Image (cartoon, rainbow, N blue to C red; front, side, top):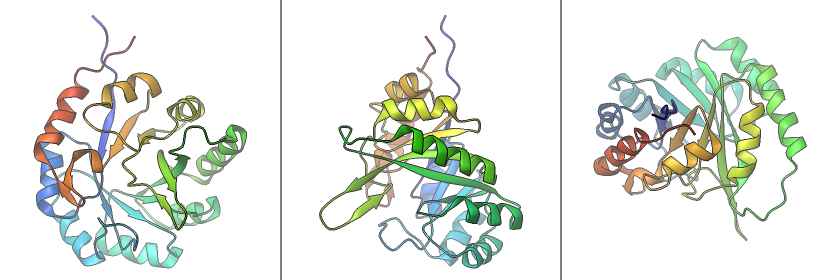
Length: 231
């Protein structure tokens, strides 16, 4: 019998206690909350995030985008999450400052284009990855970024990135690595068996509409995870 690949699950874009409980009751390991990110349809206020976190029985990860260090520290002290996830252009130096100042874990996002034909400098990405690890990151999330004529969308694209590159980066990553971007019940087995991440992170793949979690899709996702096996 093939051995099942162990893979943690973070379900992001939580906008209510009800949605947090759907994730928890289905067996997810983490609930992600986007906090005051203007471009995200799933963003909630610090007050809402505090209430959701307080009533969530699984660890909560807060997502911030290009916020000053002092602002992040103040928000974390109010909300008391398990971890925060830096979602923007935050440098490794800021990550280190946060690591030195906070008790919670610090996760960092790295982005791969949804256009798989777009050239990627793997060497530069490995250098950046190593800088985040050296700064004290507890986990790395490889997500997708989508560029259009008028804007750039970091995460929450619902589109798959270059899994070949993600696989190579995860192979050299010495801390837990999550794969994100376009993951849904229908492709989760392929994603895990190909890329072999320590965890998956998804949002739109288990929604009925933006910001509204679909219980049946979450259940289907978790059932499909049980079918994943190593080769």
